[in-house]
Image (cartoon, rainbow, N blue to C red; front, side, top):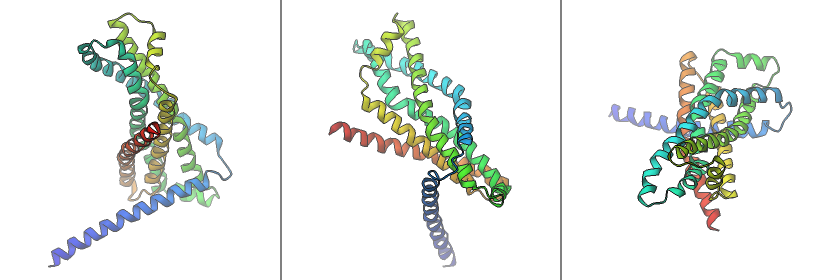
Amino acid sequence: MSTLLSKKYVFSKGIDQYFTGIHDAYKFTLLFFKEVTKRPFHFREVVHQSFEVGIKSLALISLTGFIVGIVFTKQSRPSLEDFGATSWLPSLIGIAIVKALGPLVTALICAGKVGSGIGAEIGSMKVTEQIDAMEVSAINPFKYLVVTRVVATTITIPILALYCSFVALYGSYLNVHTEETSSIISFYQNAFKSISFLDIFSALARSVVYGFTIGIVGCYKGYNAIQGTRGVGKAANQAVVLAMFLVFIEEIIIVQIVNWIRFF
């Protein structure tokens, strides 16, 4: 009987912690929207964080996008050759990369690299009481640490997604060029022939949502880190896992909304 009661207690405590975490995350996000419009705006810190997110992720984004373009082209060519439709290859690659792979691959890379970095950095400041010291110094730590990083990821990740798409298309062009001689101009023209303004807008909108999610999740996990240095590693790990999970959920929702818009 005591074992059964103990299991019920653990289960009930887990449910309470789950819903408490959702409520805390909601308040944390709501506080961001309240603080983002208040002075001071810390433009210099936003630029610095944008550099940390963008420039330092550029090499990894370039390599990944280039490989994605080559591999996807190699995988798609045999299927199109069976139907004698290799001329549609640039259009297929353009649709797949610009509409889906570019934003998604960029978000997953940044969730692993940027999200973990933000979670670990803010988490280490939390457990070493640097955030408390900022409050004593009359500096709003939430405004300086959280708002600037979330704004930076929200601005920078859409730019990285566009860059990743163009690099992936260039990798695809090199693969196509080795099989059949074609100019890069005609390749890009064919690639964007089947892409509408709604497709580009939805890709940018998704990237903005992904960037905000990665930033806010990393900051939330770091800002609420506990248990010393062990909590820092835990916060970084949870930031990556939760950000990737939310990115996939948002991908499904946004694609469905765009399909509804396209239908109407």
